[in-house]
Image (tube, rainbow, N blue to C red; front, side):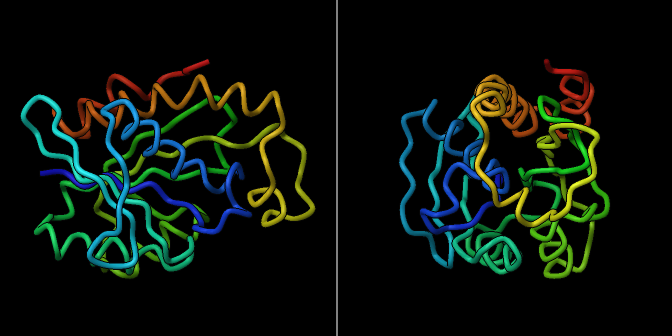
Amino acid sequence: MKLIVGLGNPESQYAGTRHNIGFCAVEKLADSFGAKFGKGKGKYLATKITHRREQIIIIKPMTYMNLSGHAVVAAMNFYKIVRNDILVICDDLNLPSGSIRLRAKGSAGGQNGLKHIIESLGSEEFARLRIGIRVDEQPLSSFSSFVLGKFSANEGAVMEKILPVCRDAALDFAINGIEHAMNHYNKPVL
């Protein structure tokens, strides 16, 4: 059994923001299987799919980004899932829009959801899929207002092309493992 976690913020005011692209990615994954999210056994929404005989739990933490670790730990405990079977999907301001990056482990890289998950698990050793949201090389006056801002029409079109790739990468992770997924999806997407 695998656990795929999409990071975001729960209130409607955050829908369509760059910081919520993790939610969008897991929604795309669930939708492709006709799965609907419902209340989980903790502060998260959850659904379950089966792909090639592998059961996959998909969650969206309802704790807000900075406390995502609480939801991840609750889901891990309820479903008896180990760190090696987790994939966290989140935004990454360090990657250009239109790119994704899979890693088997690593630092938070400034992403507060990942930071809290690392603190909660006491380890950096879990897989993550980062979705690039950086629009250009210009310095930002405010990181928080940028990541909490809505996608422009052009950015939204790019994300619509990226989300199916994220879905496929997450399914590859679930079936073949993080190394295989990294070898197949860590390349320019657009």
